[in-house]
Image (cartoon, rainbow, N blue to C red; front, side):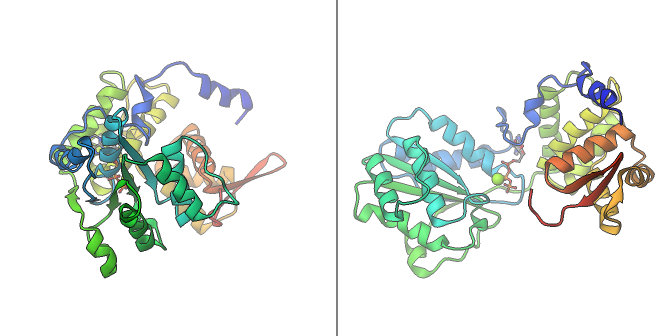
Length: 336
Ligand SMILES: Nc1ncnc2c1ncn2[C@@H]1O[C@H](COP(=O)(O)OP(=O)(O)OP(=O)(O)O)[C@@H](O)[C@H]1O
Ligand SMILES: [Mg+2]
């Protein structure tokens, strides 16, 4: 594609988005509907902290995209200005070693970067404890299942601290299910309040998606058939992917200069289609890949480019230029 044509695609002023941010994975919904009972249960666990006592330990569990992370972040945001209560969010998908978990806690409570080397774990922990002396600390370990080692050591270190220091620490774990196995010593210290996040029903998903569309897109942008397609895709996958599909479909419509999102703009698994083609034939010339892509999805060249760009940014592809030809292959190394 000539450079100027590509720039035109990017610069085109027409937009269907009223507020694109509401489709970002980090967006915290103001209306967190269908989760009243879970939020009430969390409020009950925090109540002691408001009286400067230790909050209750909790286990939030449920399958993907059922609102567990949203619930914790919403509660922690609410507690931000509460004196005497420190909240600390750690994502175990990215933070995995014992030292890095506590470095994250250190950063949260001190607002400063933890020293990377030259400090022992116990010195780091002493510093944390000094900072939170007499305060209530709530630590949430999101996606705790991803912590391969030290699960028990992390919990027992935190939950035994009060025996030696005047601190009140409680731990909130997030997991896909409620059957995490701990050895007996941890079990005797950690008997959390279990809060279940059940899968949403179709009607609930429908309301949540409609709310998000209302917040993020201009009125009447979404055709009924397109919404049905997105709803069905969401039911087969999950809410997160459904919200992402709204954004992708709107971008597809925009790229074509359309004023509304028609069914042909909604393609749930385009990237997967590209991946499947590449699994059979890789490396492949971009033009040939586009031909196969068009046959499989009936989508245009600009939509092909957008998906390739996105996959490239996410480290799924390796793109090499050989003269004027672009050669595309699947990045199987897992490195970005
Ligand atoms: N009740 C709800 N109302 C509005 N948006 C919701 C609701 N529940 C979930 N969402 C949205 O769905 C997406 C996924 O939610 P969240 O990240 O909280 O799920 P999760 O349970 O932590 O999933 P995972 O186990 O995969 O980490 C987010 O974009 C969030 O805004
Ligand atoms: Mg989550």
